[in-house]
Every structure is written in C-alpha cells, then in structure tokens.
Length: 232
Image (cartoon, rainbow, N blue to C red):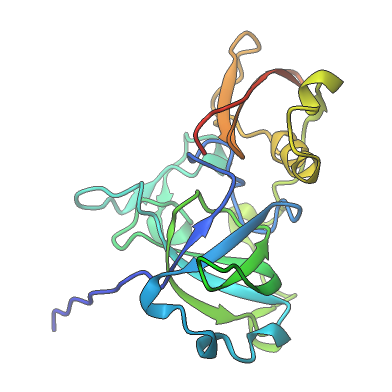
C-alpha cells in the first residue's frame, strides 16, 4: 500500500556554518561547537519542553534540505572511503537518500529564554548548517540508545583530529574568543574532501560570519586568511 506523509519543521537551527563545507561529518566530533535550536512560531510553547531539562543529550531529526535530488540511487560513495567505493545507501549516512532525513545526537547545554524567539535549546556538538529544518526532537535514553557492543562496519573508528593547526595570533584575534577552540577543532578534523590533497590549493568556508581560508601540506593545516564581514 502506497502512502505519503507531509511533515512540517518544528524548529530550525542557528549554527556557525553558512554552508556544508567545514561542518563536522558526524555529530559529537566537536563538542565545543554551540548552536541554538529555535522553534517555529506554531511550536513556541514552553509546555512542549517540560521535563526535557532532565536529559543530558537529545536526538535531532532533521532534513538534508540543501541536498535534495530527483530520484535516488541504491548506491553512494561515502567520503569516509575516499569517494571511490560504492556502498548501499542504507549502509551509509549519505544525504542522498530516498527520504532526505538525518539523525544527530547532541548535548543539551540548556533550555533558555531568548525573548524574540521564545524558549530555545542550546546544544553542543551539532553537525547542521545554519537554518536547517528540524522535524522532531527526542530525548536520548542511555539504557536504550547506547550499545557498547555495537559494530561500526566501515566506520568503526571515530574520525578524530588528524591535522596540526597553525594560525598567527593576528588572525586568531579576528575570531571571537568563545569560538576559537571550536574553529581549531573543526580545522583539525580536516574539512577537505577526502579525495583532494593538493598542498597548493587554498580552501575556504564560512564560520560565525567569517571566511576562513587555509591550505594543507602533509599533517599541517595553515590558516592563510580570516576575512571579516562574510554573511553567516
């Protein structure tokens, strides 16, 4: 029996990433990244959050709204494998899926009043671009959601920091102090596509209203420029 479901965003995230370049490849990799989950006007009822403050982590169910395509493919090329190996779409977390739905576990740093936006959620470790629509929020239950014996397939080891980050003091001073560690960690994870390793190439991405430009040679990432005034 064929069925279709219509869903509406309950919230959107306000994060430091204007585009997908630079966003950590999974949630929780950069815990120092903070973001704000702002509810849509129809869902700005604090009663809907009653009891959530008792949980340390939550699940965000969201949409790959900037990776929409017509149709779908049964196989994709995971960046984790260098973009050269095809695996089944249901064996990956690729954004190119029959239904463009994603799932992220994030730390709940607080439930706070924002004034203009009503009650919002402060979260850490999110891997979402600014403005991403969120379909649902659920509490993370350690007894049900944590499986220490689980096997991770081709992604069994976490994609941790691999690069040393070099940045002059004059450039670091352009970054708000509370965001410097998050930016350093994002760069150390190596945000480049896995198939690109040109030491002469200068890459760039938007972060917290800045344009961060860098190059990589070997295990050293060198920040070349940090430009102010880039639209967040």
